[in-house]
Image (tube, one colour):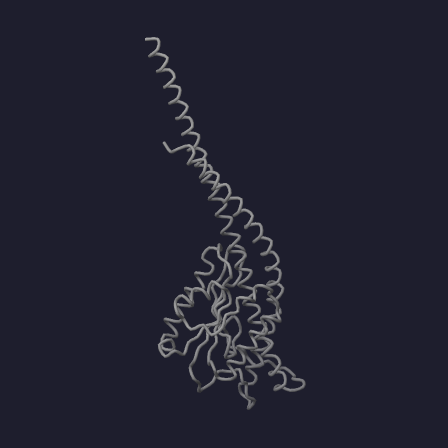
Length: 295
């Protein structure tokens, strides 16, 4: 039978762990509520803006007006992947799924670019940065500090940098890889093209040119609208990832708390059995001693 002191020590340790996981669950739930409100409010605006952008891009397709954010016929072929994870762990497979997907894309889709040295990473989140540094991947920038104060202006500055890299022909393709928030228990692993700007909606259907009246003119609108949609797109991706992180952490801590409760129940039963066995042995020793004296 297990030693009573060892069981008591382990029981105390598991109870302390349960208190920690329960507290972390409540903290994640509070952060999730705020993050969920932010992403739910942003999505309709972002979707409508993306729809207008897609329609405008399609309208420019058959004109002589140049869309500088469109796909290039000739380029360097260089690729930049923006991998969005969290700064902290204890959120289940949240970060591992994104990192695994990024490595899969690099190996399967951009294997040739990797061999040529034409593939680079931009990380948002320490988990991605630390992992890819250990694996000796080419990380051109890390923006893990965004989570210290997650605001539109700070994310927009990163989006402007991405647009600058594309317009300067440093990279011909920029993709985002992140977890999209569905609900507290479900995150959708998402990969989307950031640049070049495509003429497709989120549903994947080709956008038909809409009959818009442009004021002042298409060139002025395209120069303002597309950068704005790209800023919103990146901000939405980071917000999605942040909300999904809190949901994943809340779920993971809930499961950890339940597991600790079950383990405490098993250890308590084991402790009671060991204590009962110890008391029985002591009684037997007393009875045996008394009989020996009487004999």
